[in-house]
Image (cartoon, rainbow, N blue to C red; front, side, top):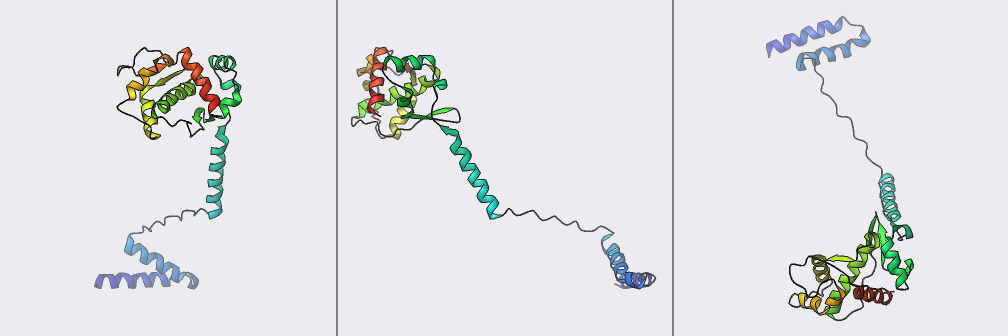
Length: 204
């Protein structure tokens, strides 16, 4: 404690040698140098706080950008096989846009109601419509068995006991004679494409 008092007194004497208007500052600097070894505590600059208006504008822009990515399917988006399918069955691009839309390059469904009260019929409609969704841009009227199972579950029309039987009973619509668990993907037959055309018209 005695040493500290002596150092402080030394600082006072040194500060007195400075001009009157600088003595207080000089004393403060010298005292700080003694206590902290000359290292000043760095101050963290205040981070700018975004204004509510800026946040609202950012949210608005985000919503607008999202809306801008949702658009009708254009003729240029259709695969040539899809165009021939529409032409052959008396359908138009407008019919497709009633059921699907494009977002960020992906084709997504608009319809909610399959317009079917039978579980077996709903399952087949899901398969046909998934094949349609694939064909719009790829030209391949194909679907994944697992994806049909998943959508049927989401729509509360999945009959696990008769899932395979429903496919077998409607085998003329697909590229297999009898469904079995080894089948992971399937394509529509010509009969299946005709049924699909009828479903498209039914869902308008």
